[in-house]
Image (cartoon, rainbow, N blue to C red; front, side):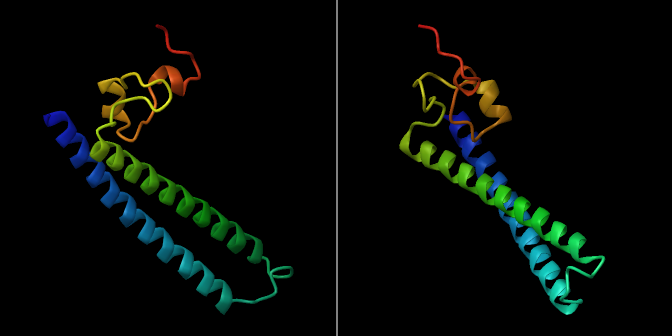
Length: 120
């Protein structure tokens, strides 16, 4: 099953990239916290206080998204190990190869992802 080996390789590569991105974002967040700590602690009167807070929130949201992506990748790898990769988690039907090629972490077929009941 070469396509499953290809899927595993793609997921592992995507996982490496996601971990690198997460590590970079965590460094950015730590730097922004350190910069804010070194700056004026009075955010209410500091004209840059709101900007720094916004930047921290933005990086925190990106960190959450990167962690979610890693979770999705791990779940897809688990489905590969269990032999359920490529099967829709809702209807049990096949997830199209085209969908998996574009979105290797997909756990639902296009119909279920769109909220449409599967025919037949």
